[in-house]
Length: 466
Image (cartoon, rainbow, N blue to C red; front, side, top):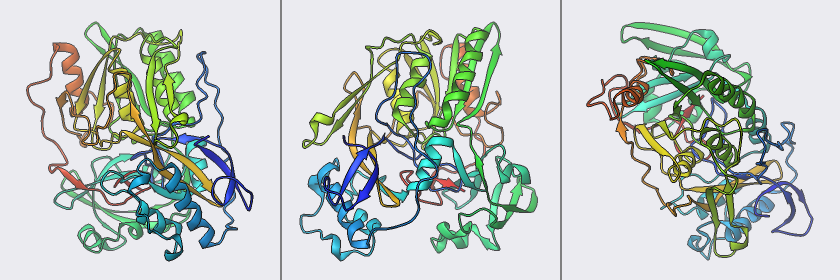
Protein backbone atom coordinates (compact mmCIF):
# COMPACT_ATOMS: atom_id res chain seq x y z
CA UNK A 1 0.00 0.00 0.00
CA UNK A 2 1.38 3.43 -0.86
CA UNK A 3 -0.35 5.17 2.03
CA UNK A 4 0.46 4.39 5.65
CA UNK A 5 -0.94 5.38 9.04
CA UNK A 6 1.09 4.26 12.02
CA UNK A 7 4.75 3.30 12.09
CA UNK A 8 6.72 1.31 14.61
CA UNK A 9 10.36 2.07 15.18
CA UNK A 10 12.82 -0.75 14.75
CA UNK A 11 10.75 -3.21 12.69
CA UNK A 12 11.73 -4.43 9.25
CA UNK A 13 9.98 -3.31 6.07
CA UNK A 14 9.91 -0.03 4.15
CA UNK A 15 13.02 1.97 5.01
CA UNK A 16 13.83 1.91 8.74
CA UNK A 17 10.37 0.71 9.82
CA UNK A 18 7.42 -1.50 9.22
CA UNK A 19 4.44 0.57 8.08
CA UNK A 20 0.77 -0.14 8.63
CA UNK A 21 -2.10 0.83 6.27
CA UNK A 22 -3.08 4.49 6.13
CA UNK A 23 -4.76 7.23 4.13
CA UNK A 24 -3.69 8.64 0.83
CA UNK A 25 -4.05 12.37 0.94
CA UNK A 26 -4.15 14.79 -1.93
CA UNK A 27 -3.34 17.92 -0.02
CA UNK A 28 -3.15 21.43 -1.27
CA UNK A 29 -3.54 24.90 -0.01
CA UNK A 30 -6.07 23.41 2.50
CA UNK A 31 -5.61 25.48 5.59
CA UNK A 32 -7.75 26.30 8.51
CA UNK A 33 -7.11 28.91 11.08
CA UNK A 34 -3.89 29.11 12.88
CA UNK A 35 -3.13 25.43 12.68
CA UNK A 36 -0.54 24.05 10.32
CA UNK A 37 -3.21 22.38 8.30
CA UNK A 38 -3.29 19.87 5.54
CA UNK A 39 -5.75 19.37 2.82
CA UNK A 40 -6.72 18.10 -0.54
CA UNK A 41 -6.38 14.44 -0.42
CA UNK A 42 -7.30 10.96 -1.06
CA UNK A 43 -7.45 8.19 1.43
CA UNK A 44 -7.50 4.45 1.08
CA UNK A 45 -10.98 4.54 -0.38
CA UNK A 46 -14.04 3.96 1.76
CA UNK A 47 -16.54 5.28 -0.76
CA UNK A 48 -19.51 2.92 -0.94
CA UNK A 49 -22.47 2.44 -3.26
CA UNK A 50 -24.94 3.69 -0.67
CA UNK A 51 -25.95 7.21 0.29
CA UNK A 52 -24.21 6.91 3.65
CA UNK A 53 -20.41 6.83 3.55
CA UNK A 54 -18.45 4.24 5.45
CA UNK A 55 -15.71 6.34 6.92
CA UNK A 56 -12.62 5.33 8.85
CA UNK A 57 -10.99 8.20 10.69
CA UNK A 58 -7.78 8.54 12.60
CA UNK A 59 -7.65 9.21 16.31
CA UNK A 60 -7.07 12.75 17.48
CA UNK A 61 -5.11 11.39 20.43
CA UNK A 62 -2.07 10.32 18.42
CA UNK A 63 1.16 10.27 20.39
CA UNK A 64 3.32 13.36 20.35
CA UNK A 65 6.25 11.74 22.13
CA UNK A 66 9.32 11.48 19.92
CA UNK A 67 11.28 8.24 20.21
CA UNK A 68 13.38 8.36 17.05
CA UNK A 69 16.75 9.99 16.68
CA UNK A 70 17.22 12.80 14.15
CA UNK A 71 19.35 10.45 12.04
CA UNK A 72 16.54 7.87 11.92
CA UNK A 73 13.97 10.49 10.94
CA UNK A 74 16.25 11.92 8.28
CA UNK A 75 16.97 8.48 6.85
CA UNK A 76 13.28 7.60 6.71
CA UNK A 77 12.36 10.78 4.83
CA UNK A 78 15.07 10.37 2.21
CA UNK A 79 14.39 6.63 1.76
CA UNK A 80 10.69 7.25 1.33
CA UNK A 81 11.29 10.10 -1.12
CA UNK A 82 13.68 8.06 -3.26
CA UNK A 83 11.10 5.28 -3.54
CA UNK A 84 7.66 6.97 -3.72
CA UNK A 85 8.17 10.65 -4.63
CA UNK A 86 6.55 11.46 -7.97
CA UNK A 87 9.76 13.15 -9.12
CA UNK A 88 12.16 10.73 -7.41
CA UNK A 89 14.51 10.94 -10.41
CA UNK A 90 15.04 14.66 -9.69
CA UNK A 91 16.48 14.06 -6.21
CA UNK A 92 20.28 14.64 -6.28
CA UNK A 93 22.02 11.27 -6.29
CA UNK A 94 24.64 12.49 -3.82
CA UNK A 95 22.11 13.80 -1.26
CA UNK A 96 23.10 12.40 2.15
CA UNK A 97 20.54 12.55 4.96
CA UNK A 98 23.32 12.61 7.56
CA UNK A 99 24.30 16.10 6.40
CA UNK A 100 21.07 17.71 7.62
CA UNK A 101 19.88 18.85 11.03
CA UNK A 102 16.23 17.83 10.68
CA UNK A 103 13.86 15.77 8.51
CA UNK A 104 12.35 19.02 7.29
CA UNK A 105 15.76 20.08 5.97
CA UNK A 106 16.13 16.72 4.20
CA UNK A 107 12.74 17.15 2.55
CA UNK A 108 13.61 20.66 1.43
CA UNK A 109 16.86 19.44 -0.11
CA UNK A 110 15.08 16.57 -1.91
CA UNK A 111 12.02 18.53 -3.09
CA UNK A 112 11.75 19.15 -6.86
CA UNK A 113 11.24 22.89 -6.63
CA UNK A 114 10.35 23.37 -10.30
CA UNK A 115 6.99 21.64 -9.77
CA UNK A 116 6.58 20.95 -6.06
CA UNK A 117 5.65 23.76 -3.68
CA UNK A 118 3.53 21.55 -1.45
CA UNK A 119 5.42 18.63 0.12
CA UNK A 120 5.80 19.04 3.88
CA UNK A 121 6.25 17.45 7.31
CA UNK A 122 3.82 18.13 10.17
CA UNK A 123 2.69 16.89 13.58
CA UNK A 124 0.82 13.57 13.54
CA UNK A 125 -1.48 14.67 16.35
CA UNK A 126 -2.40 17.89 14.58
CA UNK A 127 -3.07 16.22 11.24
CA UNK A 128 -5.26 13.49 12.69
CA UNK A 129 -7.33 16.00 14.66
CA UNK A 130 -7.87 18.19 11.61
CA UNK A 131 -8.87 15.42 9.22
CA UNK A 132 -11.09 13.45 11.59
CA UNK A 133 -12.89 16.07 13.67
CA UNK A 134 -12.17 19.52 12.23
CA UNK A 135 -10.48 20.55 15.49
CA UNK A 136 -8.21 23.62 15.32
CA UNK A 137 -6.31 25.92 17.62
CA UNK A 138 -6.02 29.60 16.75
CA UNK A 139 -8.00 32.81 16.60
CA UNK A 140 -10.06 31.67 13.61
CA UNK A 141 -9.42 34.01 10.69
CA UNK A 142 -8.22 33.68 7.12
CA UNK A 143 -6.13 36.59 5.84
CA UNK A 144 -5.04 37.98 2.48
CA UNK A 145 -1.95 40.09 1.78
CA UNK A 146 -2.23 42.16 -1.39
CA UNK A 147 0.57 43.50 -3.57
CA UNK A 148 0.70 46.80 -1.68
CA UNK A 149 1.34 44.95 1.61
CA UNK A 150 -2.16 45.48 2.94
CA UNK A 151 -3.47 42.62 5.06
CA UNK A 152 -7.20 41.87 4.90
CA UNK A 153 -9.45 39.55 6.86
CA UNK A 154 -10.99 37.26 4.26
CA UNK A 155 -12.97 35.00 6.53
CA UNK A 156 -13.98 34.72 10.18
CA UNK A 157 -14.98 31.25 11.35
CA UNK A 158 -18.15 30.88 13.42
CA UNK A 159 -17.63 29.93 17.08
CA UNK A 160 -13.99 31.06 16.87
CA UNK A 161 -12.31 33.54 19.23
CA UNK A 162 -12.16 36.06 16.36
CA UNK A 163 -15.91 35.81 15.82
CA UNK A 164 -16.57 36.28 19.53
CA UNK A 165 -14.24 39.29 19.59
CA UNK A 166 -16.17 40.97 16.77
CA UNK A 167 -13.62 40.77 13.94
CA UNK A 168 -15.32 41.05 10.55
CA UNK A 169 -14.65 39.94 6.98
CA UNK A 170 -13.23 42.96 5.16
CA UNK A 171 -11.40 44.38 8.20
CA UNK A 172 -7.88 45.50 7.33
CA UNK A 173 -5.17 44.49 9.81
CA UNK A 174 -2.75 47.39 10.34
CA UNK A 175 -0.65 45.82 13.08
CA UNK A 176 -0.21 42.76 15.28
CA UNK A 177 1.08 43.03 18.85
CA UNK A 178 2.49 46.49 18.25
CA UNK A 179 4.26 45.69 14.96
CA UNK A 180 2.98 47.00 11.64
CA UNK A 181 2.19 44.66 8.77
CA UNK A 182 4.96 46.36 6.77
CA UNK A 183 7.50 45.61 9.51
CA UNK A 184 6.45 41.98 9.73
CA UNK A 185 6.64 41.57 5.96
CA UNK A 186 10.05 43.24 5.76
CA UNK A 187 11.41 40.89 8.45
CA UNK A 188 9.69 37.82 6.91
CA UNK A 189 8.33 37.18 10.39
CA UNK A 190 4.82 35.90 9.73
CA UNK A 191 5.38 32.57 11.45
CA UNK A 192 6.01 34.40 14.73
CA UNK A 193 3.69 37.37 14.22
CA UNK A 194 0.58 35.77 15.71
CA UNK A 195 2.38 34.12 18.63
CA UNK A 196 2.52 30.50 19.72
CA UNK A 197 -0.07 28.04 18.42
CA UNK A 198 -1.48 27.32 21.87
CA UNK A 199 -4.77 27.94 23.69
CA UNK A 200 -4.62 30.94 26.00
CA UNK A 201 -2.19 33.00 23.89
CA UNK A 202 -3.58 36.54 23.58
CA UNK A 203 -2.74 38.88 20.72
CA UNK A 204 -3.76 42.46 19.95
CA UNK A 205 -4.84 43.38 16.42
CA UNK A 206 -4.92 46.98 15.22
CA UNK A 207 -7.73 47.07 12.64
CA UNK A 208 -9.13 49.53 10.12
CA UNK A 209 -12.85 48.98 9.49
CA UNK A 210 -14.68 50.30 6.42
CA UNK A 211 -11.65 52.41 5.58
CA UNK A 212 -12.35 54.82 8.43
CA UNK A 213 -12.62 53.37 11.94
CA UNK A 214 -9.50 52.19 13.79
CA UNK A 215 -9.92 49.49 16.41
CA UNK A 216 -7.64 47.63 18.82
CA UNK A 217 -9.06 44.19 19.49
CA UNK A 218 -7.58 41.63 21.87
CA UNK A 219 -8.29 38.02 21.00
CA UNK A 220 -7.23 34.85 22.83
CA UNK A 221 -6.48 31.64 20.97
CA UNK A 222 -8.55 28.57 21.70
CA UNK A 223 -9.22 25.10 20.34
CA UNK A 224 -12.55 24.85 18.54
CA UNK A 225 -14.25 22.95 15.73
CA UNK A 226 -14.65 24.18 12.18
CA UNK A 227 -17.65 23.11 10.16
CA UNK A 228 -16.42 22.49 6.59
CA UNK A 229 -19.85 23.59 5.37
CA UNK A 230 -19.36 27.28 6.03
CA UNK A 231 -22.74 28.38 4.64
CA UNK A 232 -25.63 26.66 2.87
CA UNK A 233 -28.91 28.16 1.70
CA UNK A 234 -31.53 28.10 -1.05
CA UNK A 235 -31.73 31.27 -3.12
CA UNK A 236 -35.00 32.06 -4.90
CA UNK A 237 -34.40 33.96 -8.16
CA UNK A 238 -37.66 34.45 -9.99
CA UNK A 239 -39.12 30.96 -10.36
CA UNK A 240 -35.68 29.32 -10.05
CA UNK A 241 -34.47 27.75 -6.82
CA UNK A 242 -30.68 27.79 -6.51
CA UNK A 243 -28.62 25.85 -3.99
CA UNK A 244 -25.67 27.76 -2.53
CA UNK A 245 -22.96 25.90 -0.61
CA UNK A 246 -19.75 27.46 0.71
CA UNK A 247 -17.58 24.40 1.27
CA UNK A 248 -14.34 24.94 3.14
CA UNK A 249 -12.46 21.62 3.29
CA UNK A 250 -12.76 17.98 2.25
CA UNK A 251 -12.44 16.28 5.65
CA UNK A 252 -14.32 13.51 7.46
CA UNK A 253 -15.95 16.22 9.57
CA UNK A 254 -17.79 17.38 6.44
CA UNK A 255 -20.10 14.40 6.06
CA UNK A 256 -22.96 15.25 8.48
CA UNK A 257 -23.38 18.90 7.50
CA UNK A 258 -22.79 18.15 3.80
CA UNK A 259 -25.55 15.52 3.78
CA UNK A 260 -27.89 17.78 5.77
CA UNK A 261 -27.36 20.58 3.23
CA UNK A 262 -28.07 18.33 0.25
CA UNK A 263 -31.17 16.88 1.89
CA UNK A 264 -32.45 20.44 2.28
CA UNK A 265 -31.58 21.21 -1.34
CA UNK A 266 -33.37 18.06 -2.54
CA UNK A 267 -36.48 18.79 -0.45
CA UNK A 268 -36.56 22.39 -1.70
CA UNK A 269 -36.51 21.29 -5.34
CA UNK A 270 -33.44 23.22 -6.47
CA UNK A 271 -32.59 23.11 -10.18
CA UNK A 272 -29.33 25.09 -10.15
CA UNK A 273 -26.36 25.18 -7.78
CA UNK A 274 -23.52 27.52 -6.88
CA UNK A 275 -20.65 25.70 -5.13
CA UNK A 276 -18.36 28.19 -3.42
CA UNK A 277 -14.83 26.77 -3.26
CA UNK A 278 -13.01 30.09 -3.23
CA UNK A 279 -11.04 29.26 -0.07
CA UNK A 280 -11.14 25.47 -0.24
CA UNK A 281 -7.58 24.28 -0.59
CA UNK A 282 -8.33 20.57 -0.64
CA UNK A 283 -8.74 17.52 1.55
CA UNK A 284 -9.63 13.86 1.15
CA UNK A 285 -10.34 12.90 -2.44
CA UNK A 286 -12.98 10.30 -1.61
CA UNK A 287 -14.99 13.12 -0.06
CA UNK A 288 -14.46 15.21 -3.20
CA UNK A 289 -15.87 12.30 -5.22
CA UNK A 290 -18.76 11.93 -2.78
CA UNK A 291 -19.64 15.63 -2.99
CA UNK A 292 -19.55 15.45 -6.78
CA UNK A 293 -21.80 12.36 -6.68
CA UNK A 294 -24.39 14.35 -4.74
CA UNK A 295 -24.63 16.89 -7.55
CA UNK A 296 -25.11 14.72 -10.65
CA UNK A 297 -26.97 11.56 -11.59
CA UNK A 298 -23.90 9.33 -11.53
CA UNK A 299 -23.22 5.69 -12.18
CA UNK A 300 -20.92 3.64 -9.96
CA UNK A 301 -18.95 2.94 -13.14
CA UNK A 302 -18.31 6.62 -13.94
CA UNK A 303 -14.69 7.62 -13.36
CA UNK A 304 -14.17 10.64 -11.12
CA UNK A 305 -10.36 10.68 -11.20
CA UNK A 306 -7.35 8.53 -11.95
CA UNK A 307 -4.39 8.60 -9.54
CA UNK A 308 -1.07 7.67 -11.17
CA UNK A 309 2.11 6.94 -9.20
CA UNK A 310 5.71 7.01 -10.41
CA UNK A 311 7.02 4.29 -12.75
CA UNK A 312 8.26 2.23 -9.79
CA UNK A 313 4.75 1.85 -8.41
CA UNK A 314 2.35 1.65 -11.33
CA UNK A 315 0.62 -1.23 -9.53
CA UNK A 316 -0.60 1.36 -7.00
CA UNK A 317 -2.43 3.41 -9.65
CA UNK A 318 -6.09 3.83 -8.75
CA UNK A 319 -9.34 4.79 -10.38
CA UNK A 320 -11.73 6.68 -8.11
CA UNK A 321 -15.35 6.28 -9.20
CA UNK A 322 -18.53 8.21 -8.54
CA UNK A 323 -21.13 6.79 -6.14
CA UNK A 324 -24.68 6.11 -7.33
CA UNK A 325 -27.07 7.83 -4.90
CA UNK A 326 -30.81 8.25 -4.80
CA UNK A 327 -30.44 11.60 -3.06
CA UNK A 328 -28.41 13.34 -5.79
CA UNK A 329 -29.66 16.63 -7.25
CA UNK A 330 -29.43 15.40 -10.86
CA UNK A 331 -28.02 18.72 -12.04
CA UNK A 332 -27.07 19.31 -15.67
CA UNK A 333 -24.69 22.12 -14.76
CA UNK A 334 -22.89 23.56 -11.75
CA UNK A 335 -21.44 27.01 -11.00
CA UNK A 336 -18.20 26.98 -9.00
CA UNK A 337 -16.69 30.08 -7.38
CA UNK A 338 -12.89 30.01 -7.47
CA UNK A 339 -9.83 32.00 -6.43
CA UNK A 340 -6.10 31.30 -6.28
CA UNK A 341 -6.83 29.51 -2.98
CA UNK A 342 -9.06 26.96 -4.76
CA UNK A 343 -6.74 23.99 -4.91
CA UNK A 344 -6.16 20.27 -5.11
CA UNK A 345 -9.32 18.31 -4.25
CA UNK A 346 -11.35 21.42 -5.15
CA UNK A 347 -9.79 21.42 -8.60
CA UNK A 348 -10.52 17.67 -8.76
CA UNK A 349 -14.23 18.42 -8.33
CA UNK A 350 -14.15 20.83 -11.26
CA UNK A 351 -12.14 18.47 -13.45
CA UNK A 352 -14.05 15.37 -12.38
CA UNK A 353 -17.44 16.90 -13.20
CA UNK A 354 -16.49 18.51 -16.53
CA UNK A 355 -16.73 15.34 -18.65
CA UNK A 356 -20.32 14.74 -17.46
CA UNK A 357 -22.04 18.10 -16.87
CA UNK A 358 -21.48 21.76 -17.70
CA UNK A 359 -19.18 23.45 -15.20
CA UNK A 360 -19.12 27.25 -15.16
CA UNK A 361 -16.34 28.69 -12.99
CA UNK A 362 -16.69 32.21 -11.62
CA UNK A 363 -13.94 34.24 -9.97
CA UNK A 364 -10.21 33.96 -10.65
CA UNK A 365 -7.69 31.31 -11.69
CA UNK A 366 -7.24 28.38 -9.31
CA UNK A 367 -3.96 27.44 -7.63
CA UNK A 368 -2.90 24.70 -10.07
CA UNK A 369 -2.22 21.46 -8.16
CA UNK A 370 -2.86 18.42 -10.36
CA UNK A 371 -0.93 16.16 -7.99
CA UNK A 372 -1.47 14.60 -4.58
CA UNK A 373 0.36 12.97 -1.72
CA UNK A 374 0.28 10.11 0.72
CA UNK A 375 0.30 10.91 4.42
CA UNK A 376 2.96 8.67 5.94
CA UNK A 377 3.42 8.87 9.74
CA UNK A 378 6.86 8.26 11.25
CA UNK A 379 7.44 8.65 14.96
CA UNK A 380 5.41 11.72 16.04
CA UNK A 381 5.45 13.31 12.57
CA UNK A 382 3.79 12.90 9.18
CA UNK A 383 5.53 13.04 5.81
CA UNK A 384 3.24 14.40 3.09
CA UNK A 385 5.23 14.32 -0.15
CA UNK A 386 3.83 14.45 -3.68
CA UNK A 387 3.37 10.86 -4.85
CA UNK A 388 0.73 10.79 -7.59
CA UNK A 389 -0.65 12.68 -10.58
CA UNK A 390 -4.38 13.39 -10.96
CA UNK A 391 -6.19 12.92 -14.28
CA UNK A 392 -9.89 13.06 -15.15
CA UNK A 393 -11.67 10.53 -17.37
CA UNK A 394 -10.84 12.64 -20.45
CA UNK A 395 -7.13 12.45 -19.70
CA UNK A 396 -6.86 16.12 -18.64
CA UNK A 397 -4.03 16.78 -16.19
CA UNK A 398 -0.93 18.92 -15.57
CA UNK A 399 -2.86 22.15 -14.96
CA UNK A 400 0.01 23.61 -12.96
CA UNK A 401 -0.91 27.10 -14.19
CA UNK A 402 -4.36 26.75 -12.64
CA UNK A 403 -7.85 26.58 -14.13
CA UNK A 404 -9.00 29.86 -15.64
CA UNK A 405 -12.51 31.09 -14.77
CA UNK A 406 -15.36 31.04 -17.27
CA UNK A 407 -16.48 34.39 -15.84
CA UNK A 408 -14.03 36.73 -14.11
CA UNK A 409 -15.21 38.19 -10.80
CA UNK A 410 -13.65 39.65 -7.68
CA UNK A 411 -13.65 38.26 -4.16
CA UNK A 412 -15.79 40.97 -2.59
CA UNK A 413 -14.74 41.40 1.04
CA UNK A 414 -17.38 44.03 1.69
CA UNK A 415 -20.10 41.37 1.71
CA UNK A 416 -20.38 38.07 3.58
CA UNK A 417 -20.18 34.75 1.78
CA UNK A 418 -23.66 33.85 0.60
CA UNK A 419 -24.80 37.46 0.31
CA UNK A 420 -26.40 37.75 -3.13
CA UNK A 421 -24.76 41.18 -3.53
CA UNK A 422 -21.26 39.70 -3.12
CA UNK A 423 -19.45 40.12 -6.43
CA UNK A 424 -18.65 36.49 -7.31
CA UNK A 425 -22.01 35.11 -6.22
CA UNK A 426 -23.79 37.96 -7.99
CA UNK A 427 -21.92 37.09 -11.21
CA UNK A 428 -23.00 33.45 -10.94
CA UNK A 429 -26.62 34.45 -10.30
CA UNK A 430 -26.50 36.83 -13.26
CA UNK A 431 -25.31 33.99 -15.51
CA UNK A 432 -28.16 31.77 -14.27
CA UNK A 433 -30.67 34.54 -15.02
CA UNK A 434 -29.27 35.68 -18.38
CA UNK A 435 -27.35 32.72 -19.78
CA UNK A 436 -23.96 34.44 -20.04
CA UNK A 437 -21.25 36.12 -17.97
CA UNK A 438 -22.06 39.64 -16.79
CA UNK A 439 -20.32 42.27 -18.90
CA UNK A 440 -18.48 43.67 -15.90
CA UNK A 441 -18.16 43.21 -12.18
CA UNK A 442 -17.79 45.94 -9.63
CA UNK A 443 -14.27 46.07 -8.24
CA UNK A 444 -14.36 45.96 -4.47
CA UNK A 445 -11.88 45.34 -1.67
CA UNK A 446 -9.12 44.32 -1.83
CA UNK A 447 -8.11 46.64 -4.67
CA UNK A 448 -4.83 45.01 -5.58
CA UNK A 449 -3.94 41.63 -6.99
CA UNK A 450 -2.64 39.22 -4.40
CA UNK A 451 1.05 38.44 -4.88
CA UNK A 452 1.85 36.91 -1.48
CA UNK A 453 0.17 35.50 1.58
CA UNK A 454 1.61 35.72 5.05
CA UNK A 455 2.46 32.20 6.00
CA UNK A 456 3.57 29.04 4.25
CA UNK A 457 1.49 26.32 5.85
CA UNK A 458 1.94 22.63 5.10
CA UNK A 459 0.73 21.84 1.62
CA UNK A 460 -1.01 25.18 1.36
CA UNK A 461 1.51 27.20 -0.56
CA UNK A 462 1.25 30.58 1.14
CA UNK A 463 -2.08 30.86 2.88
CA UNK A 464 -2.87 33.13 5.81
CA UNK A 465 -4.73 30.99 8.31
CA UNK A 466 -4.48 31.97 11.96
